[in-house]
Image 1 (tube, helix red, strand yellow):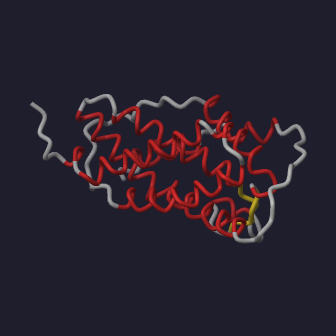
Image 2 (tube, helix red, strand yellow):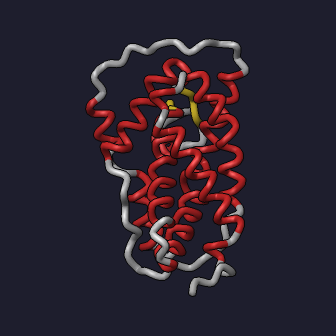
Length: 206
């Protein structure tokens, strides 16, 4: 019999699962939502998601191998491209809290769409692992998701939220952006940022 007193069944974890599921649901249905409305939805759900992630329990992993991945490169690109189209001129913003800043002399251009797609990748994998019902897998899903939140997507979330706040209260309207062929840019995106970091964290014993 499963012990519901275990950390993986705690209120903090269950509430985070609900928040993560809500976030993923909206990203998957982005094509049905206007850009301005999606930004307002993210304005409300991102702080809640951040709060619930910060309350996840500290766990130790059961397995030495990395968690199974479900989100494919195609899935990531679909979320990213849909949001990029929806956000238009609201998508790009200057960012000083970015790992690429070390290679430049100033702020870099970041995008809300890329941030949301990265967060979606991690949260969707987490949800699908947690839903397996296997306690060891669920444990490692929570452990990995919290690790990634602390070291990666938590910063992505807060960066994007600042840009979203600024645009919503700027009084501007979303304009359409004419896109050039950015196949090379998408090759960079396909390096799988979160997956790479997961391996690095495992290797470093974090």
